Length: 254
Image (tube, rainbow, N blue to C red; front, side, top):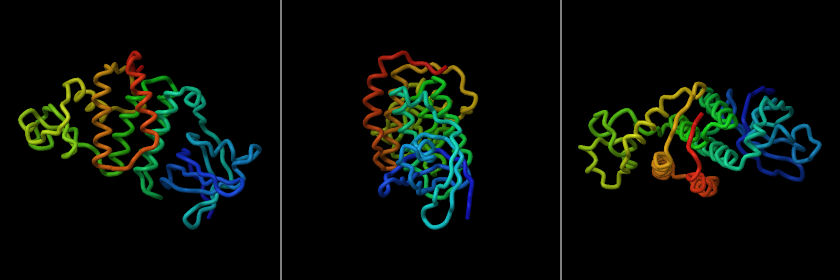
C-alpha cells in the first residue's frame, strides 16, 4: 500500500552498501521506520530528504515492520539550526526524546505540530533551552508520564515549594517534609514551570529566565526523566557540557 506522510527525520542508520533505515515521526502514523534504498549515495534523490532534522513529505510503500521510502520532498531543512552548535545540540536532544518516548505507529498529530513549531522557534533564535523544556512537557504528556504541575500532589494546595521526583509533582511547604529528597524550588522556577506547561508554542513571546532558574528546571527535568522514563539519552551528556558553558551567556527568549 502506498502512503503519503508528513514527517520529521529523527535518526538514520546505515543499511547495506548504500542504503539507510530512516526513523520518521509522522503526523499521520506516528513513529515509523522506512528503508531508503540508495540514500547514502551523494547523487541519490533521497539523500537530502533523509538527513536527521529534515521536515518533509514522504511517499512510502507500507507493509511489514519497515516501509520502503520511494520519494521525498523537503519542506524545511532547518539549515540555520545546523550551522549553530548550541541549537544543533538542543535539536538533537529533542529528536532523541521523541524517538525514545514514543511507541511505533501511534499517531500523535498534536505533538507532531508541537515538534515542528518548537524547531521553527529555535531556528528563529529563541531560547533553545526553554523551548526544549516546553517540548519535554508535551512529549512526556503524550507518553503518559506528565509531571503534576497544577497543585500539590499530596494535598491539592496551589502552593509549590518543592518538586517530588518520587511522587511526580509539586509539594507545598506543609507536605515538603514527607519527601526529604524533593527538589526545593524558588517561586520563580515554579511559576516559570507552570507557564511553560500552558504556553501556546505558536504564540511564544518574550520570556526572561534567569540562569539559576533555568538550572533548577534542568535538574528537575533530568531527575524526573531518570526516575520515570529511565532511558539513557546519548545526546544529553554533550548538551549538559554546552549548557554549563551557556549559563554564562545572557538569558532571553524573544
